[in-house]
Length: 103
Image 1 (cartoon, one colour):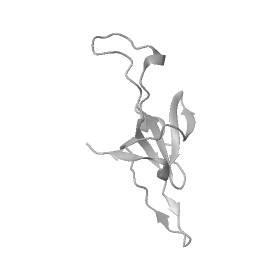
Image 2 (cartoon, helix red, strand yellow; image 1 turned 135 degrees about the horizontal axis):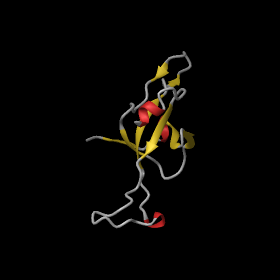
Image 3 (cartoon, rainbow, N blue to C red; image 1 turned 180 degrees about the vertical axis):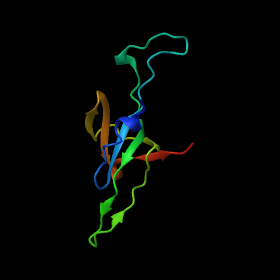
Image 4 (tube, rainbow, N blue to C red; image 1 turned 120 degrees about the vertical axis):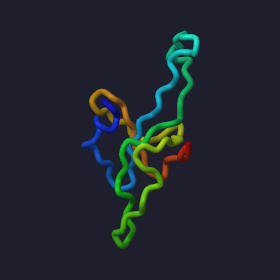
């Protein structure tokens, strides 16, 4: 089951973005398992869902900079962790996301 189908009923509010962090590499190319403490922290994630955007004083939505499916660079700290069906996701504000990775 894909991440999108697990969270299809979760809709972030306003300028929030639901992100699944990319997991660090767990074994080398030669097949040797890397201990959890030695794994590099990955600061990338995939956008799973986005809100409608922040509101202006007039009540209009300001569009977000990212869309579902985008690969992004995350700050080392921040975000709110949530668990959905045993899988961990993070909620960030659109302004907290550092960059979008273009392929």
